[in-house]
Amino acid sequence: MTVSQGLFLIGFSLVLLAVVIFAAIVLRDAARMGSSANVTRSFFRRLRRPSAERAELDRWAFYAHRLSGFAVFAFLLLHIVDISLFSLSRARYDDVHKLYGSVVLRCFECGLLFAILFHAFNGLRLLSIDLVNLRIETSRRLLLAAVTLTIAGGAAGSVVILKPLFA
Amino acid sequence: MTETENAIQAGRAPALRPSRRTARRRETRPRARAASFVLVRVTGLALTVLVLGHFALTHIVHDVADTNSTFVARRWGSALWVAWDGLMLASAIAHGAAGVWIAIDDYTPDPVKRGRRRAVLLSLSGLALALGTIAIAAAEW
Image 1 (cartoon, rainbow over the protein chains, first blue to last red):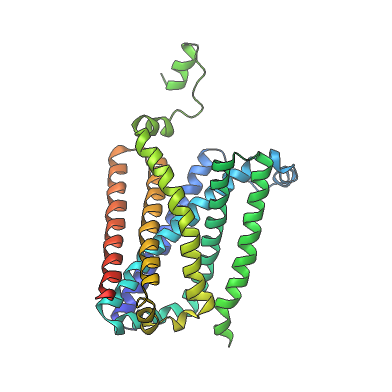
Image 2 (cartoon, one colour):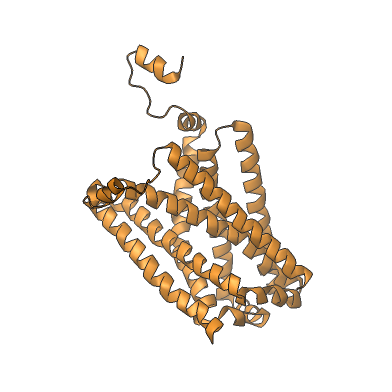
């Protein structure tokens, strides 16, 4: 491993560490606000309510939106640094860029894809709530659509990203 | 006496959560907040196209292992992609910094700590913006 690759991996670890710490802060605050989800029988009973009564879905969407946004932004800062190596020396850029094809980074890219898709679809939902003043049932239905599109798009994209590992 | 007890004694309904959020709201300037609200939504809408397009091109259409310096050089030879990447860089930094700024406000009640975290956020964002701009500009000359 070269020095540049080592530095990139240190930066990558710092990004992951920042995301874990941020997730802990978000979850601790959620518990403080009384939003902690205790997985008990009453939890499953609550899930069977009609979606209009499930206010917790909006909160969960909020936490997922915030966490995915932070994760993408943290990675963006690192990504800009490795891209800017291109103007320093193309050989060094290629050297660091090779890591993107590794097993760990490819798995990370799948996670990144899920985060970007959820943040984008849920963001469009929030924008449409602001612009059109949607009813609460409609906004919950759009949340369901955003989650479905994220899972479908993320799974399909992950197959494409991971395929070279099995070739 | 706590803020809640004060409110009850004065015959007012106590604030639901008098701790962190009220402290923040007093301090925020409404105009800056409205500007940040619009900024986040406009850049967010642009980023759904710019970022999803970028990700699709570099991970789905091409394999990530093939997007080496030759690929970057060819792409930055076209004005369209320079504009795309420049716009994406500026929007993403503005969108991300505005979002994390709000998260910092939410989770940092201590004003000294909040100032410190804001400073870290602004310097990291500014540094990334400068570095990215230099990289794109340097590829042009």
